[in-house]
Length: 118
Image 1 (cartoon, rainbow, N blue to C red):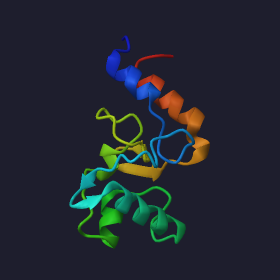
Image 2 (image 1 turned 90 degrees about the vertical axis):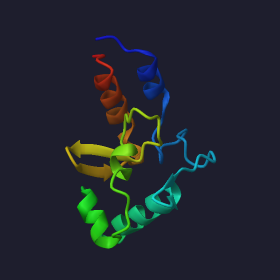
Image 3 (image 1 turned 30 degrees about the horizontal axis):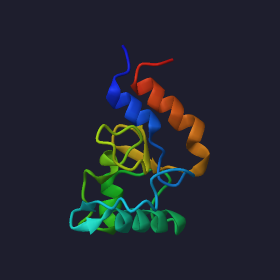
Image 4 (image 1 turned 180 degrees about the vertical axis):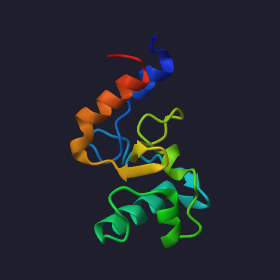
């Protein structure tokens, strides 16, 4: 399998929260009437205060905020096909965790696997 132009774009993206990423570049999307920044701020604060487990599902987030938009986690996962800000690592189907600055090598490997590179 060869990597097409879409994979090249995926490999150039850096996740939110890692130096050089898209954070703070004025790219703000609206999700469920609330901004991307709003939701990631709430999720980070909930993790910091241990209101959310390290690995969480949409249902866990909705227990805190029933209006949370379900597609948000997958839409912002590492390697998402839409080129959205990479905020979460998909650990298993439906299970996510926040991207951390230490994830750099892991994220490069995940992107390469998605493109069929070794």
